[in-house]
Image (tube, rainbow, N blue to C red; front, side, top):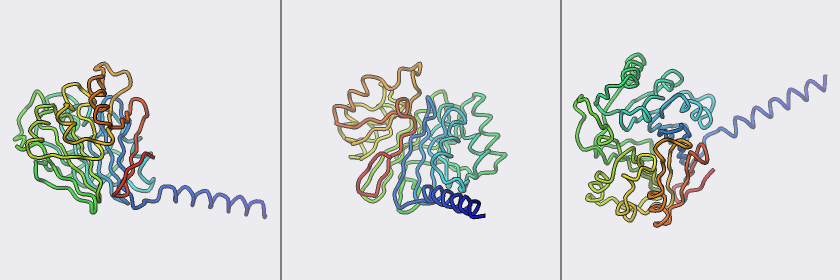
Length: 276
C-alpha cells in the first residue's frame, strides 16, 4: 500500500513541477519560431499571446505547443503582416488548433491557392478580421505595439508584390523596444527613417536577411543590440546574405538565426533582454 501511495505522491509532484514550469511569469517572451523559410513570431506576456505571422506550414502549431501552457488554446490576436505563403499559410493549422480572438490582415488579394485556402479557413472559423495601418496600436498592457507601416489601405486589390504592404510594428515593454519588420525593403526603411525612427533593442531582420533590406543607413539609425533572423536551413535564396550579416556586425548587433538555433526565445523584464 505504501509503495502505491509513494508512486501516487511522486506522480502528483511531477505534475505540479510540470505545471509550475509552464506557469506565466512577469516577463515578456519574444519567440522567433523555427518554421523553415518563413516568419512566425510569438509574443507572450503572462496569459496573453500575440502571433505575428504563421510561417509556410503547420510547424507553427508545434512552436505554439512548445511555448504556450498546455491548457491555453487561445490567441488574443494574430497579425499576418502580408499575404505571402511563407508568412500566412500556417494560419490554417493554427485556426484548426486554437481559438483566435482577432485577426489583423491587409485587405489584399494574392491570387495563389494558399491565399484562397486561408481565406476560406478564416471564413469558416468566423474570426473577426481588421486591417492595420500606420498609427494604429495594439495593446496587451503593459506591452504596446505601434503600427508604422503601411500608410494606405489595401482596398481589396490584387497585388504582385505584397511586400510593399508588409506591416511594421514597434513594440515597447517598459524601457525595452523591439521592431518587427515583416518583408519590407530598403526603400520602405528609408521612408520610416524620414519619420524619426530611432534605436531599438531587438530587431526582427526584414525579409529573412535579404540583401535588399536591412540597409546600412537603417541599421545606423536603429542600432539593434540583438538581431533575429528567421530563415530556413540551406534555403534556395541564400538567406541570410553575407551583406546583411556584415552590416549587422558593423553596428555590433548580436545575431540569432532560426536556421542555426531552431526556436529563438528572448526574454525581457522591461529593462534588459536575455536568451532563454
